Image 1 (cartoon, helix red, strand yellow):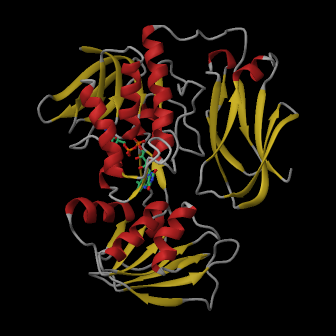
Image 2 (cartoon, rainbow, N blue to C red):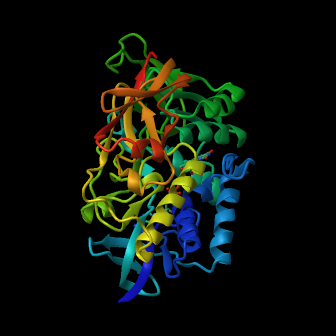
Length: 423
Ligand SMILES: Cc1cc2nc3c(=O)[nH]c(=O)nc-3n(C[C@H](O)[C@H](O)[C@H](O)COP(=O)(O)OP(=O)(O)OC[C@H]3O[C@@H](n4cnc5c(N)ncnc54)[C@H](O)[C@@H]3O)c2cc1C
């Protein structure tokens, strides 16, 4: 069995950034395994701009952003295998994968980085009556058809769900000559970034129907139309508010789910809110030497944060392999991070201050739209920090910074709670 220092599952932006950083940190035998026919992950189908503003201080397309990392991987002569699907990993860090040339094979790694990204949630169409005619696509599938295969999914579209991919596809379909009649969102707020609502819907006069859902799909062979209705506070359609739109295409953009079948199979503990692994300050899971980063850990809004996080996982995996990491302090229990009052989750979920870097970014999402509220931080029952924010919305990731020297002054600290409060 071939032995590697670090095997990275997934060659998207997370896997690429993790591999580069692991090499920078001195790891020689690093391998990336990617099931697709090229490196770059989901970015290969993102030909719109808006990527890399934080990382490169310029606006790149998704493909350009990926290209910069791929070039670096090639310069560093990092080993990778494409068209290679990982089908199993066990807690002993043995990885079983298959491809057309090698067949099925097993590798032994000293550390593993999970970077498998996420997939689109399909359930949006499942609870709508009507046949399942042709013309219903997930927004990401439509994006791939249009941007990679050069196939136009349809001419008259309705989009269900206002996640970022749906918003981007509303603009993309319009630019290619389709008529996008509406984006229907069941919640009273959009699931996407504000900038995407402005640049992809408002600029093209595409109506965003908040608190609306589709209650009927018409058509047997090809979709011919949908019936929309307003929903009440319990998300139930309100009788009398129904109206009909003709369309030949329905795109579903109802959320993303981290790809964690491999993680769960090997015994990694998952967070029920993110569906991603529970991790500590090193982005290490409950299994020693198994790290996670990118959309497999939690769904990100911006790829820049994916790259930033992946560097942390790559660096810590390399330190683990090279035994240059700070050993766990057995005398101190880990501090738990508790999301509360409007905060849905945090990443990481635990920290040991001795092992963290000078500053640690804790990312989280809120569960509602909040205007002029504060993000507050409590050390056990003591409020230590409060920062006012004009707007917070579920579609945008939030963050706080924790400083090592401040935490080191608190040897008995057990919990750090993050809340949304008035002041
Ligand atoms: C449609 C769309 C539009 C977006 N627009 C923007 C934007 O405008 N600006 C922005 O900053 N961000 C945007 N993002 C977000 C950004 O692209 C993602 O955050 C980023 O791609 C996540 O990187 P990742 O490496 O975690 O996942 P991915 O890019 O999904 O890569 C994961 C890789 O793992 C591989 N993999 C999975 N399972 C296995 C397995 N078992 N074996 C081998 N390989 C496997 C997959 O094939 C894939 O290549 C967009 C995302 C999408 C989906």
